[in-house]
Amino acid sequence: MERRFNTDAMMNTVYKKLNNKPKKRKRVFIALLSVFLITINIPFPVNFTTTAIEIIQTDPSHSIEHTVTVRGWYSTRIFSSHNEFRGSVTVSGYPETFLEMDGLQFHRFIGNSNFRLADIFYLGELGEKPRRPPFGIMFAERGSFLKGSLIMVFENGLGDTHYSPIIVVGATNQEEALNAIRTMERTTGLSY
Image 1 (cartoon, rainbow, N blue to C red):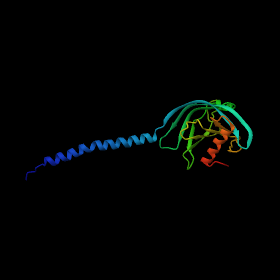
Image 2 (image 1 turned 180 degrees about the vertical axis):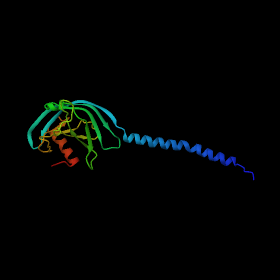
Image 3 (image 1 turned 30 degrees about the vertical axis):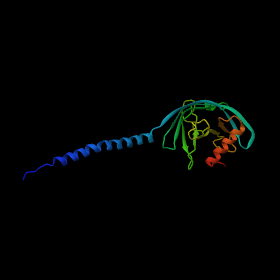
């Protein structure tokens, strides 16, 4: 028995396979692009010097003006709650801030997507991470690139929003500083 090939059916099958290749390539490309965007850090340069006001909420007479300089790179992941800052944050009146700083790893508050939180460590003279407590905590609003941040300075390794000095970056007077702290407390729920 002689076997006959249906050339029309074969050509239709080949045409369909060739026609589906671009769709598969497009899907693979979109999948790879999505994975790339989710995992990559996108760095932005941060370079500014501004005034800041240091206050203690329970001591109305405590109001010190500082100059804060921030230089470095702020990296963010598009679909992640973790951001990172590599560079320096120096505060006049605090000599330890002129040492090399360990990178800041900002983490989102649970249930809140507006503020990020990071421990601030300054490295020792030789660049090693000290065994002492951190200098403080930095609160930064999402998308602010540290311009409207608050720095709670630890005393003996502990910090409290009412009794610890808080440096409000960008504030020009005590009232602006208090408003920024109250906004942070209301938004994060960190009122003690």
